[in-house]
Image (cartoon, rainbow, N blue to C red; front, side, top):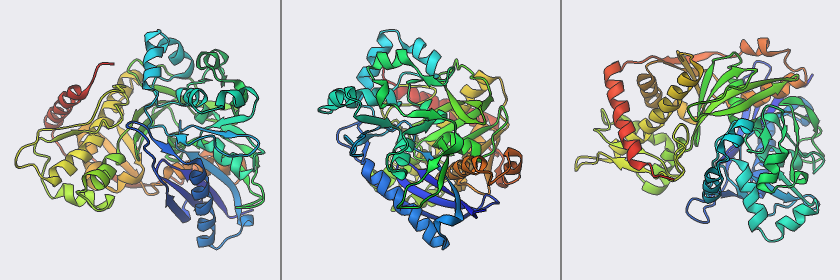
Length: 494
């Protein structure tokens, strides 16, 4: 049997490839950043060709670093930035335009119109989602309506739509496979999470022809073999959106288990078992994964700006030279001295869902320095997480005693400790923090018999550090109250 599973982790700012061994440990990896494109305020785009070329390059690089051949790879698992929308020509394989990224807000007016028409309850009941530019449906409609010739080509069956997983598989198989999995389909606002089918009424509502849509399959199965070229022939056997993959990689496979991924955005998920749980607190109900015909669901709270606030400190404000410097700078002061940073650069996600909110920094004095702003920026990530956790508690009735964490920012001990303080509950960092890629690897490995089942995988998960709350509960409540006042100050009525 082949020795490794290759996980392709296509993120918002970079593409990564990680090889995992039978113990679920990474043995080689490669990463490559790619351009972020901002044509207009609130617009965010990626070049689909660069997404593919960067992902292909790191796959080859990771294999080279490990000194292995394609025959040493048992399967490929794919995990991806979700909702980001790619449309391409079926004959040429060339993108029709840049990908519209999940952060993009250009369809805000379209979403406002849908809400005013009273469609939110119907859309939510079928998709588990709120009406927001975040999701793929309005992005796809925008492309069909605004790119020259798009509607005509779609009507002739010449166009293919996909989220990034679909785009990667199309390229890996040279156009033989146009597929996605249930977890990614559930993020499009076109997929009925109860019937597990594309919803014909929603397609009519958004004026989207069914011919552009990929086939929806499970999250763990052999989809097909890669074509000659990059790494071949290797079975592609796992697909999951990045947050669902992280939930699986964290082994949150029991009902009530919760994880938070700290990436460009922040994403909390609670496994709700085999039945979808409707939210009364503006969380999302989504498909977690489908394995062997069994579908697991999750509640999710999406925070648009988390690690991206540190990038802003680096790239726009210029107060740090690299993201890794932020912890030392923030730790150089004992507190933020009353400075509160609400990073609503692209509106606010759960549980506020206010697309018109804009970022604010309050509490500034003559004594405020760069370190106070840096500390307030980190604290904003923890405060936003608290708001979502509270909404999950209310929706589920489950007291969340432990939060499993992953993603790039969890190496920041200052942030993790403040998170435990604000939550007044344990924050647990696993030994392997690359849980998004690991989840994709697990799904691929299960489909190919590389691993025997979830029971075997559960033994791989190991705790690296547990952060317990030190802050007095009264002080934590006071800090939360100040945060909520600042949030209310930046909310703008739709």
